[in-house]
Amino acid sequence: MVTGNMEAARKTYELWRQLYPRDQFAVGNLGVVYAFLGEYDKALAAHQEAWRLDPGNALQFSNVVVAYLHLNWLDEAKATAMKAIALHLDNNLLHGDLYQLDFVQHDTAGMEKEAAELIGKPGWEDLMFYNQSDTAAYHGHFSQARELTRHAVDSAQRADKKETAAAYEAEAAVREALVGNLALAKRHANNALALSNGKEVVALSATALGLAGDSAQSARLARDLNARFPQDTVVQSNLLPTIRLCYMLPYNLGVICGWAAIEVLIYARYGAKIQGRLTSCFGICSRWLSLLLWLIVSAGICIGTFAIWRKRFVFRVQVVTPKNT
Image 1 (cartoon, rainbow, N blue to C red):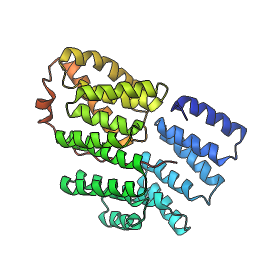
Image 2: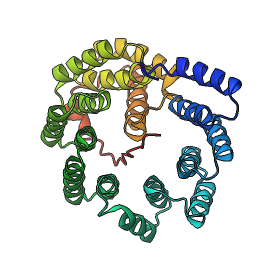
Image 3: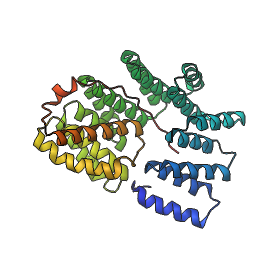
Image 4: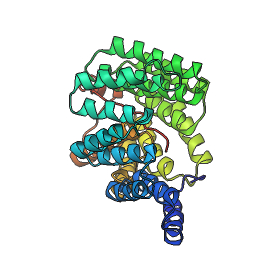
């Protein structure tokens, strides 16, 4: 998966599994690839098989829980997590997963319990601070969300997780841009880019800058990603189409329609299936922007400027920070 080509990785791990059917790493990594490609049913089956091969591995429990969450099988996710805890196989990642499950189920007490498990643990509390910031933003408490984001960034930097800190800044930039706080969105994006030029940080920052009206810098960052990751499935099929849609919004209908035809076709082929590490953020942006442009082309109307358009819509977004496997 060095190049990010998920179709090539799929073939490699499927062959590896055939040759070494009892190798939990081949099966588990294949599950990760399936999830990146949006094939969540196959991902669940692969992670369950890896769990069967190594039932004492706490990470396998966590992966199965996440696979259930992807399929919206919440009861199964909860039961698996509780089984891991009963067997004393819970880990820090599992508590992050349970927080997200409790959020979906509106279990405030559960969220507080899981937060208490990680806050105070260097190297892990930043994840919980950021999950809490998203929860606050979802409920419209943006001042609290910003404070929690600062805690997440500071904690990540203290733990020498510079890339993670940058990702929190970039994700906050998208969040602010989606609700019209454009100056703050630009500030977060530039802070993120000052910390890292990782593909996820650059992609999120470019998205935020495009939504905030800085089309030139957004387009420049998109060109950089395209040049650096020509074979990366997520970059080429999810992130770049999303960024391009964002920085094209301020243009006139003629320009937009040209891109719309391309981007909607890309989305129809890949967008519903390709999910990168930035699942929630780019999933929301890709689906919503593709629908917006389809409506524009179908109706044949001019949307005017982005500044006028953005006053009509206010979104709530939850950004989930996924984990590495």
